[in-house]
Image 1 (cartoon, rainbow, N blue to C red):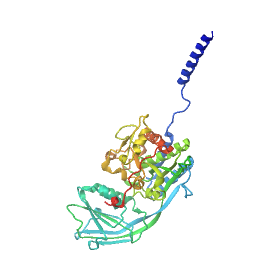
Image 2: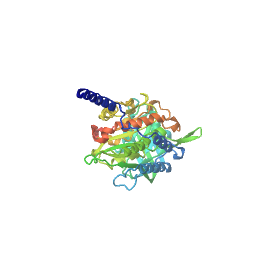
Image 3: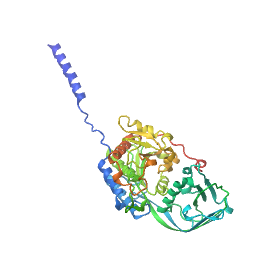
Image 4: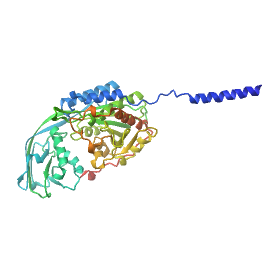
Length: 452
Protein backbone atom coordinates (compact mmCIF):
# COMPACT_ATOMS: atom_id res chain seq x y z
CA UNK A 1 0.00 0.00 0.00
CA UNK A 2 2.88 2.38 0.80
CA UNK A 3 4.41 1.67 -2.66
CA UNK A 4 1.14 2.54 -4.39
CA UNK A 5 0.85 5.75 -2.36
CA UNK A 6 4.39 6.84 -3.24
CA UNK A 7 3.77 6.13 -6.93
CA UNK A 8 0.57 8.17 -6.84
CA UNK A 9 2.38 11.00 -5.06
CA UNK A 10 5.16 10.98 -7.66
CA UNK A 11 2.67 11.14 -10.52
CA UNK A 12 0.83 13.99 -8.79
CA UNK A 13 4.09 15.92 -8.27
CA UNK A 14 5.16 15.57 -11.91
CA UNK A 15 1.70 16.57 -13.13
CA UNK A 16 1.75 19.60 -10.85
CA UNK A 17 5.13 20.68 -12.21
CA UNK A 18 3.94 20.29 -15.80
CA UNK A 19 0.84 22.31 -15.03
CA UNK A 20 2.99 25.05 -13.46
CA UNK A 21 5.14 25.13 -16.57
CA UNK A 22 2.06 25.58 -18.76
CA UNK A 23 0.79 28.50 -16.69
CA UNK A 24 1.14 31.83 -18.47
CA UNK A 25 3.75 34.19 -17.08
CA UNK A 26 2.43 36.75 -14.64
CA UNK A 27 4.94 39.29 -16.01
CA UNK A 28 3.21 41.50 -18.58
CA UNK A 29 5.08 41.91 -21.88
CA UNK A 30 6.70 45.29 -22.50
CA UNK A 31 3.96 47.33 -24.22
CA UNK A 32 6.41 49.71 -25.87
CA UNK A 33 5.95 53.45 -26.15
CA UNK A 34 2.50 55.00 -26.13
CA UNK A 35 0.94 55.23 -29.59
CA UNK A 36 -1.46 57.81 -28.16
CA UNK A 37 1.43 60.02 -27.06
CA UNK A 38 3.14 59.62 -30.44
CA UNK A 39 0.06 60.69 -32.37
CA UNK A 40 -0.81 63.58 -30.07
CA UNK A 41 2.68 65.10 -29.91
CA UNK A 42 3.52 64.86 -33.61
CA UNK A 43 0.17 66.42 -34.53
CA UNK A 44 0.73 69.28 -32.11
CA UNK A 45 4.26 70.02 -33.35
CA UNK A 46 3.31 69.84 -37.04
CA UNK A 47 0.03 71.75 -36.73
CA UNK A 48 -0.53 74.84 -38.84
CA UNK A 49 -0.66 77.00 -35.72
CA UNK A 50 3.01 76.13 -35.07
CA UNK A 51 3.77 77.99 -38.31
CA UNK A 52 6.70 75.76 -39.20
CA UNK A 53 8.65 76.22 -35.93
CA UNK A 54 11.23 78.61 -37.40
CA UNK A 55 14.25 79.39 -35.23
CA UNK A 56 14.11 82.80 -33.61
CA UNK A 57 10.43 83.28 -34.47
CA UNK A 58 7.41 83.22 -32.10
CA UNK A 59 6.37 79.87 -33.59
CA UNK A 60 9.70 78.35 -32.56
CA UNK A 61 9.22 79.68 -29.03
CA UNK A 62 5.71 78.16 -28.91
CA UNK A 63 7.14 74.78 -29.86
CA UNK A 64 9.74 75.07 -27.09
CA UNK A 65 7.04 75.93 -24.55
CA UNK A 66 4.95 72.95 -25.67
CA UNK A 67 7.91 70.61 -25.21
CA UNK A 68 8.78 72.07 -21.81
CA UNK A 69 5.18 71.41 -20.73
CA UNK A 70 5.52 67.79 -21.92
CA UNK A 71 8.71 67.30 -19.91
CA UNK A 72 6.96 68.74 -16.85
CA UNK A 73 3.95 66.44 -17.37
CA UNK A 74 6.25 63.42 -17.55
CA UNK A 75 8.11 64.48 -14.41
CA UNK A 76 11.63 65.01 -15.73
CA UNK A 77 14.16 66.98 -13.71
CA UNK A 78 15.75 70.12 -15.05
CA UNK A 79 19.36 70.02 -16.16
CA UNK A 80 21.79 70.85 -13.33
CA UNK A 81 22.46 74.56 -13.38
CA UNK A 82 19.14 75.43 -15.04
CA UNK A 83 15.99 76.65 -13.32
CA UNK A 84 13.69 75.53 -16.15
CA UNK A 85 13.66 73.08 -19.04
CA UNK A 86 14.72 75.84 -21.43
CA UNK A 87 18.45 76.08 -22.09
CA UNK A 88 18.79 79.57 -23.55
CA UNK A 89 21.67 81.20 -25.38
CA UNK A 90 22.12 84.29 -27.55
CA UNK A 91 22.30 84.40 -31.33
CA UNK A 92 22.79 87.28 -33.71
CA UNK A 93 20.70 87.84 -36.81
CA UNK A 94 22.40 89.75 -39.59
CA UNK A 95 20.66 91.66 -42.35
CA UNK A 96 22.63 92.47 -45.48
CA UNK A 97 22.29 96.13 -46.41
CA UNK A 98 24.74 96.05 -49.32
CA UNK A 99 26.69 93.29 -51.08
CA UNK A 100 28.70 93.11 -54.29
CA UNK A 101 31.27 90.77 -55.81
CA UNK A 102 33.50 91.10 -58.87
CA UNK A 103 35.62 88.36 -60.43
CA UNK A 104 38.15 89.22 -63.12
CA UNK A 105 36.85 92.79 -62.94
CA UNK A 106 33.37 91.55 -63.94
CA UNK A 107 30.42 92.09 -61.56
CA UNK A 108 28.77 88.87 -60.36
CA UNK A 109 24.98 88.73 -60.69
CA UNK A 110 23.20 89.05 -57.35
CA UNK A 111 21.58 85.62 -57.69
CA UNK A 112 25.00 84.00 -58.16
CA UNK A 113 26.56 85.14 -54.87
CA UNK A 114 25.78 84.39 -51.22
CA UNK A 115 27.03 86.08 -48.07
CA UNK A 116 27.25 84.39 -44.65
CA UNK A 117 28.49 87.03 -42.25
CA UNK A 118 27.97 88.86 -38.97
CA UNK A 119 30.83 91.28 -39.59
CA UNK A 120 29.62 94.89 -39.75
CA UNK A 121 31.45 95.37 -43.06
CA UNK A 122 33.60 93.51 -45.56
CA UNK A 123 36.13 94.94 -47.96
CA UNK A 124 38.08 92.08 -49.51
CA UNK A 125 40.35 92.13 -52.52
CA UNK A 126 42.74 89.63 -54.06
CA UNK A 127 45.53 91.92 -52.90
CA UNK A 128 44.88 91.09 -49.23
CA UNK A 129 45.21 87.32 -49.65
CA UNK A 130 45.95 85.33 -47.44
CA UNK A 131 43.68 87.42 -45.19
CA UNK A 132 40.93 85.94 -47.38
CA UNK A 133 41.26 82.27 -48.32
CA UNK A 134 40.03 81.29 -51.78
CA UNK A 135 38.56 77.79 -52.14
CA UNK A 136 37.79 76.42 -55.60
CA UNK A 137 35.22 73.59 -55.70
CA UNK A 138 35.33 72.18 -59.20
CA UNK A 139 32.79 70.07 -61.04
CA UNK A 140 34.46 66.84 -59.94
CA UNK A 141 34.93 67.85 -56.30
CA UNK A 142 32.63 66.89 -53.42
CA UNK A 143 31.20 70.11 -51.92
CA UNK A 144 29.78 68.26 -48.89
CA UNK A 145 33.20 68.21 -47.24
CA UNK A 146 33.36 72.01 -47.36
CA UNK A 147 29.87 72.83 -46.05
CA UNK A 148 30.85 72.87 -42.38
CA UNK A 149 33.50 75.54 -42.91
CA UNK A 150 31.23 77.54 -45.23
CA UNK A 151 28.41 77.66 -42.71
CA UNK A 152 30.69 78.13 -39.68
CA UNK A 153 33.86 79.73 -41.05
CA UNK A 154 37.01 79.84 -38.95
CA UNK A 155 38.66 82.19 -41.44
CA UNK A 156 37.39 84.49 -44.18
CA UNK A 157 36.43 82.32 -47.16
CA UNK A 158 35.70 83.11 -50.78
CA UNK A 159 34.27 79.91 -52.23
CA UNK A 160 34.14 79.56 -56.02
CA UNK A 161 31.54 76.84 -56.61
CA UNK A 162 31.19 75.26 -60.04
CA UNK A 163 27.70 75.35 -61.58
CA UNK A 164 27.72 71.54 -61.49
CA UNK A 165 26.86 72.02 -57.80
CA UNK A 166 23.92 74.37 -58.33
CA UNK A 167 21.75 72.20 -56.06
CA UNK A 168 24.15 72.79 -53.15
CA UNK A 169 24.19 76.51 -53.91
CA UNK A 170 20.39 76.62 -53.86
CA UNK A 171 20.37 74.73 -50.56
CA UNK A 172 22.63 77.35 -49.02
CA UNK A 173 20.51 80.12 -50.51
CA UNK A 174 17.41 78.49 -49.06
CA UNK A 175 19.03 78.36 -45.63
CA UNK A 176 19.96 82.05 -45.81
CA UNK A 177 16.48 83.00 -46.96
CA UNK A 178 15.08 81.64 -43.70
CA UNK A 179 17.71 82.92 -41.33
CA UNK A 180 21.15 84.44 -41.18
CA UNK A 181 21.62 83.66 -37.50
CA UNK A 182 25.07 83.13 -36.04
CA UNK A 183 26.16 82.47 -32.47
CA UNK A 184 29.28 84.61 -32.68
CA UNK A 185 28.73 88.16 -31.50
CA UNK A 186 29.10 90.58 -34.43
CA UNK A 187 32.56 92.08 -34.53
CA UNK A 188 35.25 92.99 -36.97
CA UNK A 189 37.26 90.02 -35.68
CA UNK A 190 34.66 87.39 -36.65
CA UNK A 191 34.75 85.55 -39.98
CA UNK A 192 32.60 85.44 -43.10
CA UNK A 193 31.93 83.21 -46.11
CA UNK A 194 31.14 84.37 -49.62
CA UNK A 195 29.99 81.72 -52.10
CA UNK A 196 30.01 82.49 -55.82
CA UNK A 197 28.50 80.19 -58.45
CA UNK A 198 31.00 80.06 -61.30
CA UNK A 199 30.92 78.59 -64.80
CA UNK A 200 34.04 77.37 -66.53
CA UNK A 201 37.53 76.96 -65.20
CA UNK A 202 38.67 79.28 -62.41
CA UNK A 203 41.65 79.23 -60.07
CA UNK A 204 42.37 80.55 -56.61
CA UNK A 205 44.49 83.28 -58.26
CA UNK A 206 41.49 84.98 -59.89
CA UNK A 207 41.32 88.75 -59.14
CA UNK A 208 38.33 89.58 -56.94
CA UNK A 209 36.65 92.26 -54.87
CA UNK A 210 34.00 91.76 -52.19
CA UNK A 211 32.22 94.62 -50.47
CA UNK A 212 29.35 94.31 -47.97
CA UNK A 213 27.71 95.91 -44.96
CA UNK A 214 25.48 94.26 -42.32
CA UNK A 215 23.21 95.25 -39.49
CA UNK A 216 22.51 92.85 -36.61
CA UNK A 217 20.11 92.22 -33.72
CA UNK A 218 20.33 89.86 -30.75
CA UNK A 219 17.89 86.97 -30.29
CA UNK A 220 17.43 84.34 -27.58
CA UNK A 221 17.38 80.71 -28.76
CA UNK A 222 16.10 77.76 -26.74
CA UNK A 223 16.99 74.11 -26.43
CA UNK A 224 14.58 72.12 -24.27
CA UNK A 225 16.29 69.69 -21.86
CA UNK A 226 14.97 67.23 -19.28
CA UNK A 227 16.79 64.69 -17.13
CA UNK A 228 16.06 61.32 -15.51
CA UNK A 229 18.79 60.87 -12.87
CA UNK A 230 20.45 57.46 -12.78
CA UNK A 231 19.37 54.99 -10.10
CA UNK A 232 22.77 53.31 -9.71
CA UNK A 233 25.18 55.32 -7.57
CA UNK A 234 28.13 53.83 -9.45
CA UNK A 235 26.62 54.69 -12.86
CA UNK A 236 24.60 57.88 -12.38
CA UNK A 237 27.47 60.15 -13.46
CA UNK A 238 27.38 58.43 -16.86
CA UNK A 239 24.91 59.96 -19.31
CA UNK A 240 22.88 58.67 -22.24
CA UNK A 241 21.45 61.36 -24.51
CA UNK A 242 18.23 61.09 -26.57
CA UNK A 243 17.87 64.01 -28.95
CA UNK A 244 16.16 65.51 -31.98
CA UNK A 245 15.72 69.00 -33.40
CA UNK A 246 12.35 70.67 -33.07
CA UNK A 247 12.98 73.61 -35.40
CA UNK A 248 12.00 73.72 -39.06
CA UNK A 249 11.84 76.24 -41.90
CA UNK A 250 8.80 78.32 -41.01
CA UNK A 251 7.20 79.66 -44.18
CA UNK A 252 8.02 78.90 -47.83
CA UNK A 253 6.73 80.40 -51.09
CA UNK A 254 3.06 79.34 -51.26
CA UNK A 255 1.96 76.31 -53.26
CA UNK A 256 -1.79 76.08 -53.85
CA UNK A 257 -2.22 78.64 -51.08
CA UNK A 258 -0.15 76.71 -48.51
CA UNK A 259 3.02 78.43 -47.29
CA UNK A 260 3.59 76.59 -43.97
CA UNK A 261 6.49 74.15 -43.92
CA UNK A 262 5.01 71.96 -41.18
CA UNK A 263 8.07 69.73 -40.84
CA UNK A 264 6.10 66.68 -39.72
CA UNK A 265 8.84 64.22 -40.65
CA UNK A 266 11.67 66.78 -40.39
CA UNK A 267 11.84 66.63 -37.45
CA UNK A 268 8.59 66.63 -35.52
CA UNK A 269 8.83 62.84 -35.86
CA UNK A 270 12.19 62.68 -34.09
CA UNK A 271 11.16 65.21 -31.45
CA UNK A 272 8.02 63.16 -30.78
CA UNK A 273 10.29 60.16 -30.25
CA UNK A 274 12.24 62.05 -27.58
CA UNK A 275 9.01 62.85 -25.70
CA UNK A 276 7.65 59.31 -26.04
CA UNK A 277 10.96 57.81 -24.88
CA UNK A 278 11.10 60.14 -21.88
CA UNK A 279 7.60 59.02 -20.90
CA UNK A 280 8.51 55.34 -21.42
CA UNK A 281 11.70 55.41 -19.35
CA UNK A 282 10.11 57.51 -16.61
CA UNK A 283 7.43 54.83 -16.21
CA UNK A 284 10.03 52.05 -16.13
CA UNK A 285 12.01 54.01 -13.52
CA UNK A 286 14.95 51.60 -13.57
CA UNK A 287 17.67 53.44 -15.50
CA UNK A 288 21.08 52.88 -13.94
CA UNK A 289 22.66 55.66 -15.97
CA UNK A 290 21.37 59.23 -16.16
CA UNK A 291 19.19 59.89 -19.20
CA UNK A 292 19.19 63.31 -20.86
CA UNK A 293 16.36 64.20 -23.24
CA UNK A 294 16.95 67.24 -25.44
CA UNK A 295 15.09 68.96 -28.26
CA UNK A 296 17.51 71.16 -30.17
CA UNK A 297 16.85 74.47 -31.82
CA UNK A 298 18.56 75.84 -34.95
CA UNK A 299 19.57 72.57 -36.60
CA UNK A 300 18.22 73.77 -39.93
CA UNK A 301 20.43 76.87 -39.93
CA UNK A 302 23.74 75.48 -38.75
CA UNK A 303 23.29 73.14 -35.77
CA UNK A 304 23.73 75.94 -33.24
CA UNK A 305 21.54 74.31 -30.58
CA UNK A 306 23.52 71.08 -30.43
CA UNK A 307 26.80 72.99 -30.52
CA UNK A 308 25.81 75.04 -27.48
CA UNK A 309 24.46 71.96 -25.66
CA UNK A 310 27.68 70.01 -26.21
CA UNK A 311 29.67 72.74 -24.47
CA UNK A 312 27.60 72.38 -21.29
CA UNK A 313 28.51 68.71 -20.75
CA UNK A 314 31.68 66.71 -20.29
CA UNK A 315 31.84 64.50 -23.41
CA UNK A 316 33.89 61.92 -21.47
CA UNK A 317 30.81 61.25 -19.31
CA UNK A 318 28.43 60.76 -22.26
CA UNK A 319 28.22 57.03 -22.94
CA UNK A 320 26.03 57.28 -26.06
CA UNK A 321 23.82 59.66 -28.01
CA UNK A 322 20.65 58.50 -29.78
CA UNK A 323 19.88 61.32 -32.22
CA UNK A 324 16.57 60.73 -33.99
CA UNK A 325 16.11 62.33 -37.39
CA UNK A 326 13.09 61.79 -39.68
CA UNK A 327 11.46 58.46 -38.75
CA UNK A 328 7.94 59.10 -40.04
CA UNK A 329 8.07 56.99 -43.20
CA UNK A 330 9.13 53.50 -44.20
CA UNK A 331 12.84 52.92 -44.68
CA UNK A 332 14.02 51.44 -47.96
CA UNK A 333 14.41 48.12 -46.11
CA UNK A 334 10.67 47.93 -45.39
CA UNK A 335 8.53 47.98 -42.21
CA UNK A 336 10.18 47.49 -38.81
CA UNK A 337 13.55 48.79 -39.97
CA UNK A 338 15.63 51.92 -39.54
CA UNK A 339 19.21 52.83 -40.36
CA UNK A 340 22.02 54.20 -38.23
CA UNK A 341 24.46 56.78 -39.58
CA UNK A 342 28.14 56.13 -38.99
CA UNK A 343 27.37 52.47 -38.32
CA UNK A 344 31.00 51.49 -38.90
CA UNK A 345 32.46 54.11 -36.55
CA UNK A 346 31.59 52.32 -33.29
CA UNK A 347 29.80 49.18 -32.12
CA UNK A 348 26.71 51.23 -31.17
CA UNK A 349 24.62 49.65 -33.97
CA UNK A 350 25.55 46.01 -33.30
CA UNK A 351 24.82 46.49 -29.58
CA UNK A 352 21.35 47.84 -30.34
CA UNK A 353 20.64 45.03 -32.76
CA UNK A 354 21.73 42.42 -30.23
CA UNK A 355 18.97 43.62 -27.89
CA UNK A 356 16.37 43.13 -30.65
CA UNK A 357 17.36 39.61 -31.69
CA UNK A 358 14.00 38.14 -30.63
CA UNK A 359 11.94 40.86 -32.34
CA UNK A 360 11.05 41.49 -36.00
CA UNK A 361 12.85 44.84 -35.95
CA UNK A 362 16.35 45.40 -37.31
CA UNK A 363 18.79 48.29 -37.66
CA UNK A 364 20.78 48.65 -40.86
CA UNK A 365 23.86 50.69 -41.78
CA UNK A 366 23.24 54.01 -43.52
CA UNK A 367 22.40 53.16 -47.16
CA UNK A 368 23.21 56.67 -48.40
CA UNK A 369 26.91 57.28 -47.66
CA UNK A 370 27.20 59.85 -50.46
CA UNK A 371 24.75 62.08 -48.54
CA UNK A 372 27.23 62.44 -45.63
CA UNK A 373 24.31 62.13 -43.18
CA UNK A 374 26.55 61.33 -40.23
CA UNK A 375 27.78 64.93 -40.22
CA UNK A 376 24.51 66.57 -41.30
CA UNK A 377 22.58 66.25 -38.04
CA UNK A 378 22.90 67.15 -34.38
CA UNK A 379 24.96 64.08 -33.47
CA UNK A 380 27.96 65.51 -35.32
CA UNK A 381 29.28 67.87 -32.63
CA UNK A 382 29.54 65.21 -29.93
CA UNK A 383 30.74 62.60 -32.43
CA UNK A 384 33.67 64.87 -33.28
CA UNK A 385 34.52 64.85 -29.57
CA UNK A 386 34.64 61.04 -29.47
CA UNK A 387 31.12 60.28 -28.19
CA UNK A 388 29.35 57.28 -29.82
CA UNK A 389 26.78 59.72 -31.19
CA UNK A 390 24.71 58.40 -34.08
CA UNK A 391 21.52 59.40 -35.87
CA UNK A 392 18.67 56.95 -36.39
CA UNK A 393 16.45 57.54 -39.41
CA UNK A 394 14.11 55.91 -41.93
CA UNK A 395 14.05 58.67 -44.54
CA UNK A 396 14.70 57.73 -48.15
CA UNK A 397 16.35 61.07 -48.62
CA UNK A 398 17.53 60.79 -52.24
CA UNK A 399 13.93 60.33 -53.40
CA UNK A 400 12.00 62.16 -50.65
CA UNK A 401 9.96 64.73 -52.58
CA UNK A 402 8.37 66.12 -49.39
CA UNK A 403 11.68 67.08 -47.77
CA UNK A 404 11.77 70.83 -47.00
CA UNK A 405 8.40 71.40 -48.66
CA UNK A 406 4.96 72.58 -47.56
CA UNK A 407 3.70 69.02 -48.05
CA UNK A 408 5.70 67.53 -45.16
CA UNK A 409 2.53 67.11 -43.09
CA UNK A 410 1.25 64.55 -40.60
CA UNK A 411 -0.95 62.95 -43.25
CA UNK A 412 2.20 61.81 -45.06
CA UNK A 413 3.49 59.89 -42.02
CA UNK A 414 3.11 56.21 -41.22
CA UNK A 415 2.31 56.54 -37.52
CA UNK A 416 2.13 52.79 -36.68
CA UNK A 417 5.56 52.20 -38.20
CA UNK A 418 6.89 55.35 -36.52
CA UNK A 419 5.65 54.04 -33.17
CA UNK A 420 7.33 50.71 -33.89
CA UNK A 421 10.63 52.49 -34.60
CA UNK A 422 10.46 54.43 -31.33
CA UNK A 423 9.61 51.26 -29.41
CA UNK A 424 12.58 49.52 -31.02
CA UNK A 425 14.85 52.38 -29.96
CA UNK A 426 13.55 52.05 -26.40
CA UNK A 427 14.10 48.28 -26.27
CA UNK A 428 17.44 48.36 -28.06
CA UNK A 429 18.77 50.95 -25.59
CA UNK A 430 18.14 48.71 -22.59
CA UNK A 431 21.69 47.39 -22.25
CA UNK A 432 23.25 50.85 -22.50
CA UNK A 433 20.79 52.34 -20.04
CA UNK A 434 21.28 49.54 -17.51
CA UNK A 435 25.06 49.87 -17.69
CA UNK A 436 25.50 46.35 -19.08
CA UNK A 437 26.64 47.70 -22.48
CA UNK A 438 29.02 50.55 -23.29
CA UNK A 439 29.60 51.42 -26.96
CA UNK A 440 33.14 51.95 -28.18
CA UNK A 441 34.22 55.56 -28.59
CA UNK A 442 34.45 57.26 -31.96
CA UNK A 443 37.92 58.44 -32.92
CA UNK A 444 37.80 62.19 -32.16
CA UNK A 445 38.71 64.59 -34.93
CA UNK A 446 41.95 66.50 -34.76
CA UNK A 447 42.26 70.09 -36.01
CA UNK A 448 44.07 68.78 -39.09
CA UNK A 449 41.12 66.53 -39.97
CA UNK A 450 38.65 69.35 -39.62
CA UNK A 451 40.22 71.33 -42.47
CA UNK A 452 38.68 70.79 -45.89
